[in-house]
Amino acid sequence: MRKFLFLAIAALALVTVGSAGARSASQRAHLFVGFSKSPGAAQRALVTQLGGTVRFSFPQVKALAIDLSSEKVGTLARQAGVTYVEQDPERVPLGLDTEQLTPSLSNGLYGLVTTNAVDAQSAGYTGAGVKACVADTGLDTTHPDIASNFAGGYNVFDGTNDVDVFDLGVETTETHATHVSGTLLGVDNSVGILGVAPNASLYEARVLGTQPDGSVSGSTSQVMAGVQWLADQGCKVINMSLGGGSRSRTEENLYKQVTAGGTLIVVAAGNESAHKLSFPAGYGVVLSVGAVDVNNAHASFSNTGHGLDLSAPGVDVLSSVPAGQGRNSSVTVGSTTYSALGMEFAGTTSASGIAGTIVDCGLAVSASDCPASVSGNIALIQRGSVTFAQKVESAMAAGATGAVIYNNVAGNFNGTLGSATTSGGDPWIPAVSVSDTDGAALKTQVGSSTTLVNAPSSWDTYSGTSMATPHVAGVAALVLGKNPALSPTQVESILESTATDLGRSGYDSTFGYGLVNATAALAATP
Image 1 (cartoon, rainbow, N blue to C red):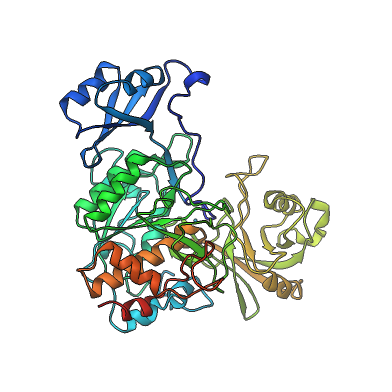
Image 2: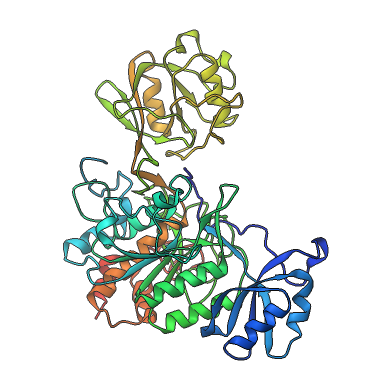
């Protein structure tokens, strides 16, 4: 499970047109080739004659996506009717069983409160009749927060309509689209979470897939093919919580066409703490979104820069994930239960958890930091000095059956143990993180009986601009539900002009026009 800042991250190493010197002459590159007219049989034949293959056709922007040996790029570029050849950049994803959680400032649904989405829903605006769509990874189509709103999908990797992660066997790696979709339009029912536009219809294009090394990515042409399919289904707003580092004129031109056709595209700004936006967020034709936390403070990971349009909640956002891939985590001492976050790769417990005495292991740099009494009990560990993995291994070496790591700065954190097993190949014990204040409280309870829960769940907390983006796409769906005749430009103008100003007065490159505001946007919608 990938729970922390894993969307809209920097692009992977990309093939660069015309710079094949460091590569084998037989290296085949993913490319776009632009023509002076819409490509047909002659243009396809030209690619074939040069030993290339056509992957996708984009007649709307007079271009083909092709694979071609790098040594033939120059020859292709010199052919009559060819206007340009460019790279086809890689894009990557930019992180409750019995009752439905009520949104509040104290839980992972705080975004529905700070953006006033709950007030808009109370006034009757739920996105009904709007096709709010997602271009992303595979999806848990049977998830209780997704199933009744799911209308159809398209898998660009095999050309079928099957995007279900369990059908495809990728439920452990492709959790992202389910999380994004839950925030966008999670169903208002008796379980789980609630989305911004809970009555909107979901069409989903799987444009990011699991690669042989376990990473998740897709080429720009694959993303484009999915976006075009979504637009062809009549989607009024498309959420793209993905990105990479390179610009593509072919991609930008297609999104101009899609927008002109009546579809608003909402894109994550990126998570590199950079002073420029990721692509496609960097194109002026899309609506780009940065992240803030529960206090409306800028998220340190969120990209900034000229062209950033809006901000939305993107820190510790609770939403849906494929069944069993999330974690329901807590630490209970006496009658007090402390909210926790399961650490990536940590061992799991049953819903009732594991019991033991809580024992202070300090920083747990080594096993000797833990007293002998930790054997068979739960280690309380402070963050800092060494990796989380080393801390938990130290506790395990001392005999601990569970670990609680508390933060050394304000708030909680999403942590990872780095791999599926310890350095010695053993499975990890259950390990969770808690905030600094909860850690201080737990430290006063050392020696008390404690229950640690890290149980599999269908919901989890992620952070990233990927989590912020569906908040904005959801509010756009609410606006379109009130007035379906609005153009993408009109919707964007409404969202920007009614946003809650943050930071410097007026527009700034850290927050854009401010925090998206559902009630103000609806009040301004004719």
